[in-house]
Image (cartoon, rainbow, N blue to C red; front, side, top):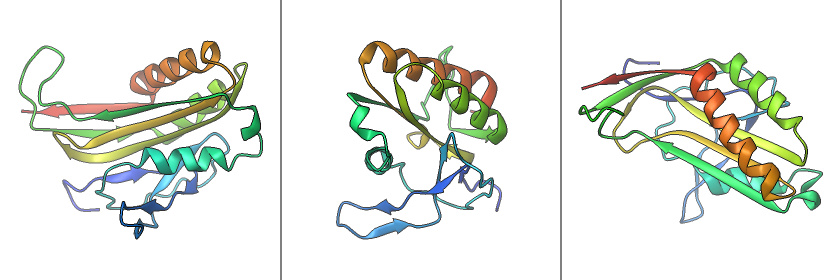
Length: 165
């Protein structure tokens, strides 16, 4: 992978990217799933993350009939840091093993059917997608805290980020 080129961090199964016109955008992009085994990088996926593709993957789950709520997070690169300093880009490095452990633990919580996570790796520009999380479960009292906890744990223990002015 060339410097400055982002890729999708992969821990699991292929997720086809379908554009609005119906054509396949990228077959190589992979998604994180708790049952994931494939730790290969995809190298160079630069398109927007597709939350709808992740939701469709959830709908294929054998226990989907138990789902009453699907909650999503789509993180993007901001033009400012938390303290207000300008940011032109960020370099993101996911810890795939840590993310896999976090997802596996969160999936054990009551009512959770599936959790999918996609984290991009490399240098990303302002406005680019960084991380997508989809949590599917039975009721909101179960799903909302799991999304928040999964996000916070991945941000704290599953990724590192360097902001560039």
